[in-house]
Image (cartoon, rainbow, N blue to C red):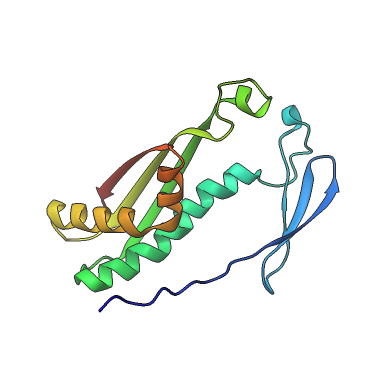
Length: 151
């Protein structure tokens, strides 16, 4: 029997402050800002939106790895992430034919585990299949180069 669809709503509110800076609030958490470096018209007082996207990739994996590891009975004691997005600034500036989002994302996961390389690969594949942020980037046509290594 097919499982019924379960939809969850996520939302954020934003209020422009000045220049290219916006304050954002999500649920009942403290508001945070998004800005740009001076060379893009900002005051460099907060991360820019695309930095939050690569941060979201780290955070989403920080959710998915423990969830999937538990299902797979995969033991680990720590995880470190590093995500780097490559953007061609010409797209942001309106040049035709240049994508304004990431050209590529490099994502490194260092996991503290005694599990085998095969088990790490199994975990990686299942996390990539189910991670919403990874899937969003992939479905947008962004090449995500992932490297998982054992600490």
